[in-house]
Amino acid sequence: KGIYCKIAQLYFLFCSLTLKDKQNERGYEHVKYFYEVIQSDDGIPVKAFVHSINTIELHWHDQIEILLVLQGSVHVRERTKSYLLKENDLILFNSNEIHNTSRTDEDNMLLALQISPEYCAACCPGFKRMVFDCKSFLARENDRERFDEIRRFMTRIVWELNKKKKGYQLTVGSEINLLAAYLINHFDCHITEDKNTAGKQRDIARLRRTCG
Image (tube, rainbow, N blue to C red; front, side, top):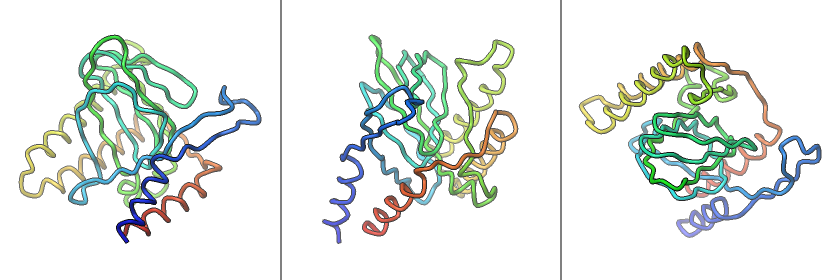
């Protein structure tokens, strides 16, 4: 069974999918991207890590990802839009949203939080279909507090994951739900139904059955 799991992972992680946008609304016709399998530890609904990047190709995953620039700067592409993120900037990539990051001419250090939307959906049905607009670098000067609160959530989550005190799983889970509630109440969001979601979910389900 292990060999089939490896084959399935290789298929989903390294095969390229080609999109053709007939209406040309996305600004490109042929784009290659891959699905990233993310597995958290100890059943915790979030994965957090600090890393430096050169180039991460266009990809997508189930998890919501919040990226915070700790040092330097990076180029970010979200679907067809490109941004330059500098120190202390953050961006939220929604579940199943195609994106990538690449370095500039200076060194970088990033904090990434990858959050399971299924965990939040257990308390808030419909959360998996919510799409948030959360980009600190596009905010007005008098609108910074919302993003400072997101940074505080990230800091507390990373602290708890690092210390691993007794019952830390409960604390981290609480912080994740509070973060989700804060996003719902303080950031623009809408409910969407991706035309390709059903097909993607079937493929992901097959992968998980193979690896289960």
